[in-house]
Length: 262
Image (cartoon, rainbow, N blue to C red; front, side, top):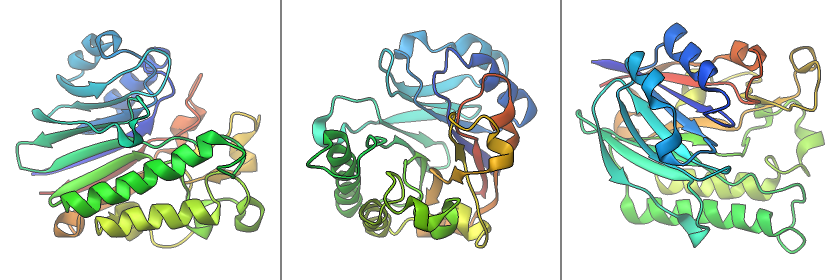
């Protein structure tokens, strides 16, 4: 049975509850992974989601910050969460579907504005977090797994609007790209989005600072869907729902989709 998974940094699930419901009603992914929920788990507005068929949820929450949730039409079994580098942040949660596929939902730290760990503690935390993801994948050797989320790094030159101008901008610096590549290699993760869309500029985030974001199109691909090699070839139909960035009071991220026939 094929299923469709979507990942979306919602930037407050309570503030944008209506947008989540719109996505559920119009696009109807079987599984929706949210990041930056900014809500304790008990205050996530699940009632309206359940009415739209999303009766299953695993989540980790925090008041006002971070937070990840997996909402699903399909039954889920929670299989834990990691607090990488002991930040005390709700940035990861995992669940297993009935077909044995494990879904990991991540929200990697943004890293602040200065790409220097000596001058900026947040940048160091980001690099350490991604290194911990690498070490976890080395140790766990995931199989039959999908990793999604806002990884806050745009790795390829065509994942940003201007490679040269962004080389010193947090999210596209060489050291971040190197760290993300090491984490990806450690789990032998396949970038499903780029497997399906191998060429061309592709973005999932546009800054709120740009009043005419659509025309300016200064985007970055920060949101990812990866899969382990044993199931990556079952993934297809990848897309970014760019239109959602233009919805009323939107998140600055757009949802990313992929379908798996498993």
